[in-house]
Length: 588
Image 1 (cartoon, rainbow, N blue to C red):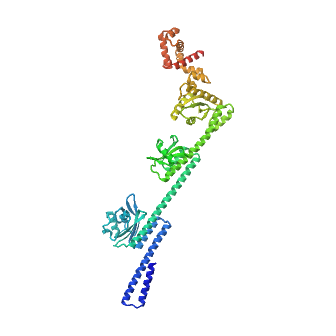
Image 2 (image 1 turned 120 degrees about the vertical axis):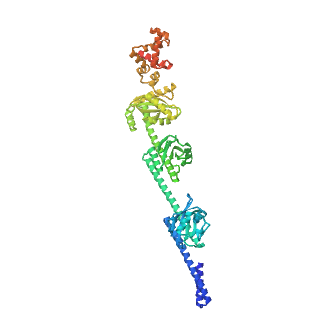
């Protein structure tokens, strides 16, 4: 407004001079006023053009056009308003410690357009380093700047002489430099520095807006990806996906290896990862914070249901994990917790049904056998087929945990009358009991005693086999054989006394079989010698008299018996078994 008023006053003075006559002095005065008015109007028009350009640039920013287009527009307008031969803009590469050309206007040299300046090198490098504008009327001869051969060669090829550079800054951080340059010497005035600085500020705003938009876009994309992955995993669980399939889906979503552990640290699934031990410290830290935590080469997230630890997920092959993928990994642990809880609910419901079937089978097998068979078939169990009945006992673990450990061996497992009962399809009772006792000891890290009976088919026979298995496990514990597995037939005469299905001939054959066979083949009297030897109280002299042979003959026969029955045949336990078998053989 001051500029406009001043111009109006000067115009009136000029008109008054012209109206009053044109003396020499008045003509000179009029000429001076006319020139001043012309300069004022030219400055006014230039300022108007500058403001229009700045407003247009601000309008471009408000419309959020392509940031490259906005930068090109800024460089073009700066060149036009400053009347420069060349205008260009460089951006800083913090990692490389360089500033490189991003946009040029009026440049004819490919070498100049590809120029990269080190921080502090040349005029532009000094502006980028100090965050201050610098101007020179003759760059090649200006000793204030650190000249390098690549920069000087490019500037010479472009033919630049006068250069003005101002910083592009966001806050206190310089992100680049905006330049105006002429191919002849030129003195840069303060108004031109201020104008170019205004354009540089607009350019910085454009770049910052582009960065913010990229961050928002990336954040939104990450959120959409996380939601889609969460929905995919949740849908997989709700459609009945098992633990391996969920682990494979998580590995695919996160592009890494996955190892899934239960609450005890046992591996449940592993996808694209090498075997590893559960990282207990990291699991504890994740459980405490409720977030995924990193180790030296992996990420760990506790699988939680409230404060309860259900298991843990380990992500391998991704030592560096961005915030979005970290949240996705944590969502995967939530979906895994959902899977665990669903499986627990299904297992509890199924266990209740199986427990009711087992209780009815063992307590009232004759009440409605057909209904028992039908209920079992619905669970995939054929009670009409032979099954071995086993009872497991262990002092170092709860019955529920013992039952869970036994589940993978049996068609039907449950706790009945404070005992863990298993029904296993077929199988020889004694060897099967011994095998399970050894494997369960390794699994549970405590002795497990197992009594077995069967095989038996049908509800009533299975109930009877259960009673015999119960007597067997009690006998094992009473005999000090905790941690072993056996059937009553494996307990010698004790088994014969306790069993419901006494097999005397089988007992005699199991105890004396090698001696009986030897006598039958050779026509010898080893069984008679053995009976006489025991009747004489193991006295060789009395035995040889009753047998009417030389004492050396008795010794030779006993040595043959030892080779057939084993060197421990005269131990108290074996001797008792053998004497009982000899009496039963004599009776038969």
